[in-house]
Amino acid sequence: MEREILAQNIRRYRKSAGMTQKTLAKKISLTPDTISLLELGRQKNPGLKYLIAISRELNVKLFQLFMENSEDLNINLIVSDQNVENLQRILDKIEIAIIRK
Image (cartoon, rainbow, N blue to C red; front, side):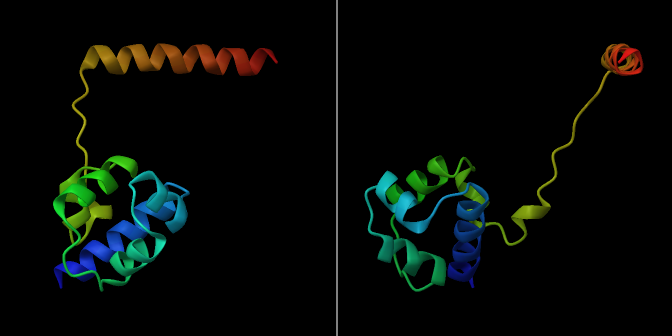
């Protein structure tokens, strides 16, 4: 089960990054066949060194490669009243600029 989750996440994050298997493999000194085996869930022991390299190249945290529903990862923002007011002023200026055009 864990290998399948890892496989799906590597494939999804790689595609999201616009990389081919060959490109990712070259960046982390693996073969495209090894990346393919990882993405098929057939690579038994990928090694922490390579998983760290993969996560860095795909710009994700290592733990995200192992999350079953990593696309559901939520990021909560705390917004202050002052930031909301600043954002509103910016949006007002953009609206005025658009109207003037």
